[in-house]
Image (cartoon, rainbow over all chains, first blue to last red; front, side, top):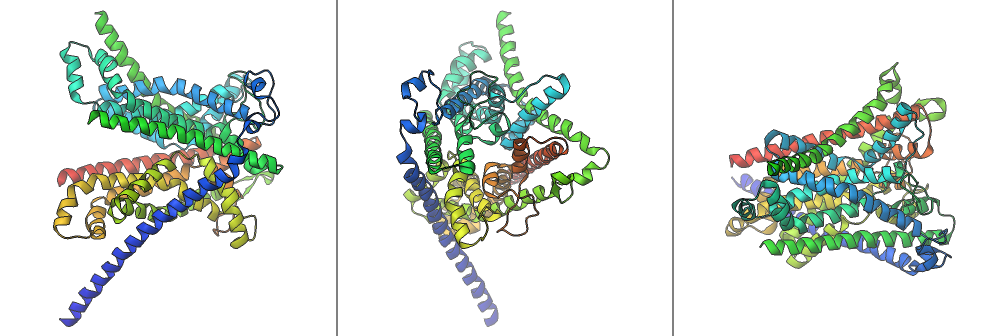
Length: 303
Length: 290
């Protein structure tokens, strides 16, 4: 009896130890996270802030001449900024209409098996590594060359298309969730007014879900801005200047960071890399913060 | 009548857009399969699955890359998972309320930090530290990549577990309090067992995220196509291999290895999704039972 008692006691203290360990783990991991991310941002600010200025963007070229496109920029990261902005806008132009309509279908029309299957495909697409999306673009070019014998090469349009495919599932999911979050009363109002399903969706549900859809889109844009693997396979170059057309090669901020981190020749180039990293981080975090701001407003509204 | 036509048109358009998404997945698979078919001829499959990658001697084995991807993702998972669990404990009652919220906000914010920025900072902070302490060589190693990758996949795991916990906690908090349980007793005895499938799914999700990442292994592992034997040595993942082969613009069998890597990655992603779906279904079934 005594032995049994002590065994129980032993197990109890084991459990007690486990609980203690969990509390220690919780505090240690949280502190560690704050330290790591804090140090990362501090380090970037320390090395990147001093480089911020017109020199970083335009090099020796006068800012106005560079902005108006009169003089090419050789030293600065301006061409990379233009490349990234072009990628963001073009992939947004492709993925937003597709994504919103796809989301509408899943939220309002899709039923049963077909909806189930489509959702599965969208999940697979969302989980597909970005390098495979780049490989899709690369393979498409190879395919065109092999089968049609056209001298195609990777370019800005192809990269935007692949990036659009990469962010498409985020926009679809965002739209679907926003629409499903709209109170059913609004749907009933539409039908009560004698509106058709399409009219209800366009005039009542979409405006009602606009903020949710919008915050989903902004998050997707951040993803398009930061992705490196896709453009690595679809036509990014280190020194291409500002792209002159859709079939041109292009520069981009994330690739510029990657390229300089491996191939920097002198301290100036290294500090430019830090500046670029800081610029890109500011860009993505601004997008992120605005998305969350919009999202929080939305939650308050439906409550 | 016109009204009806418009209605059908709208319905049809949305359906086509949703189908395009599925079509993209099928297209990726079709392209990868089309370019890997030559591998099935005259025993090339065996040579591709061999252990040595020596392009100049005609050896294009991708086995080291498969092993590299698996080892790196697993090690990153092993590093990140306990941390993620700890952070979720902290946010769900172990830590004070406000700091818990701040930690969650920080984890949310981490999702917006570009992958290439993590890699870049690691090249200039982590690599020099490793070089002076643990590793005698260049510092680019399995260890460096797995540490950075762990930070990268942390938000994915934390946010998933957090969602699971948030679904369960409101239902049990009052009962556990009434029973006089402490926070850690509640987490261990009630919350975690109830969300066991979610905890498992979080691990799979994190593993998939680690497997699919390109930039961290490309920037930090050193990319030597060798079997990964020690964390202090270099390795090469399938994702980095794809990026490197495309960058060097080589021809012939090297290209085939590229698509072989692609199709293996795709199949792994597909399997992960199937697994997650199965878990979700099983979870719904048990919840219906309760």
